[in-house]
Length: 240
Ligand code: SF4
Image 1: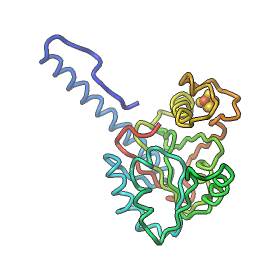
Image 2: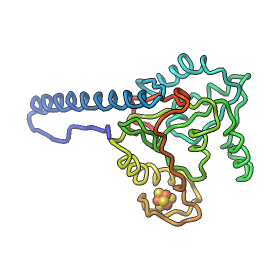
Image 3: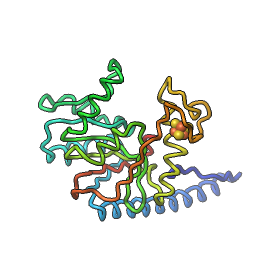
C-alpha cells in the first residue's frame, strides 16, 4: 500500500524533478494521514501504540519504553518476519532471568513443537506481528494451527506486536483480501516441503491440501484488558 515511485518519465529533467517532488510530497502527506488515523483508531480500541522510524528504532523502543515496565519471567513468540527483523528476540535471549520458550527449534519433532507451542500460551510475554491492521484499528491474522493467533487472543499476560506500515489496510474486507492474496501465498513459499498449489503459482487457490497454512482467522477488535496488546508500528515495509 505504501510503495510509491513516480510513475511518469519526462524528457526534461527539471520537469521530471518538479513533478516527482510534488508527487512525493502529496504521497507523504497521504501516508501520514493514514498512519495518524490508524494510530488514533488503535488507541481508541485500547491498544497501546508506539511509532518507530525503522526496525532498529523498534528494538530501541521495545527495550527502553516497553520491556522495563512489563515484569515478565517468561517469553515466547509466534512466527513473524517483522518481529525477527527487529532483533528483539536475539537481545532477549541474553537475559538470563528470562525463561525463553522456543517453539521453532529446527531439531524439534512436530510433536515437540506442538508441545512447546501449547506451553507458549502460558508465557508472560508473547511477541509476534500481524498480517494486517485496519485503519479502524482492528488486527487481522490467519494461521495454520492457531498457535500465533492463540497467543495474541488469550493466554500470555502481555503481547507485543511489531507491524510495518505496509500492513495497514482500509477496512476488514481489504485486510482479509491482503492476507489471502499476498501474505498467505508468500508465507507458504517459506515452508519447504509443503504441498500447496500457491507454492508453485504464487497465487492462492483456496486449496484443500493437508499442508494448507490458512485455517484459523482472528479479528482483534479491541485489546482486553486495555493495554494488554502493545503495537510497535514501524514506518517501513516489513514482513509478508
Ligand atoms: S489456502 Fe492453500 S493455496 Fe491458498 S494461500 Fe493458503 S495454502 Fe496457499
